[in-house]
Image 1 (cartoon, rainbow, N blue to C red):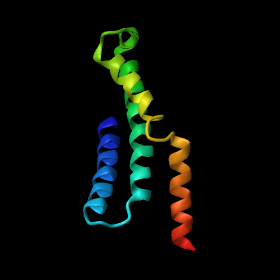
Image 2: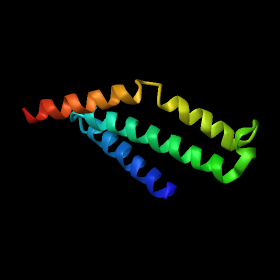
Image 3: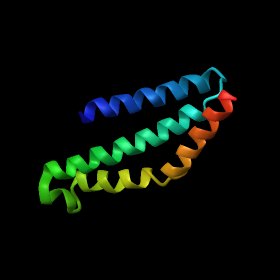
Image 4: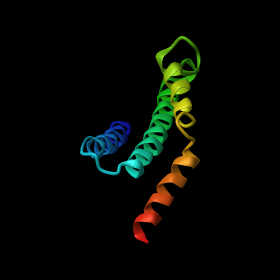
Length: 96
């Protein structure tokens, strides 16, 4: 399940990058990539901690580091709530 979600997030990033490379508008897709990618990172890191049990919370295990790093992705370059606003604004602008 985690691998499927990670691949879906990767495909969103690839779509955003291909639009950018083609000099086409990509703000909506980039915001979707950021929103979904950070969500998947956080959920996957949380599942990994659960799989490892108590040792998943203690430094210096890689799982503990992934969990901390994943949490930060929801904040850097705009919070998830800001990304949702960007997506909604761009979709509404396209429709009318």
